[in-house]
Length: 170
Ligand code: PNS
Image (cartoon, rainbow, N blue to C red; front, side, top):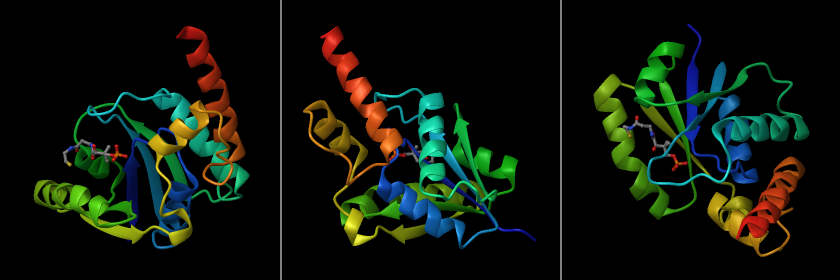
């Protein structure tokens, strides 16, 4: 039996922290689906398709995407556990940086287990990436700071053009 896991998130945009968790999770499972999910509590900077493209480009940049066991997908709506059932996944992967992340993730992990017996595997963020978040990265990019320590070159380029477009509009 092959072990399939789903790594869900907003990934708006994907950071080196997310990519590190994905690469480590891919070593634990036969197949890993990185899934861009719409979070109704957040207004995304990038469309779901753009986020998928940035994840794929970033995995390729880091030499991880040659690994055919990693797939990147979109969940347009509905329960995450239904997506898990559809692809035969028995586990969810979540990265965590600190106890704030764990407090946020724990209720979701328990609900997902109640709904469909899908277990959540928590992977601690590499301390090197412990301070990275997508929202901080967007803020630094908008204020013309360097994000090269936090994201791949593909994401840095996308952030630079999205920051320029935002300035033109405002
Ligand atoms: O990166 P984020 O925004 O913290 O990710 C949150 C996400 C998308 C993983 C979470 O909102 C989610 O699981 N949404 C799917 C909807 C769902 O299944 N909800 C009920 C169980 S938690």
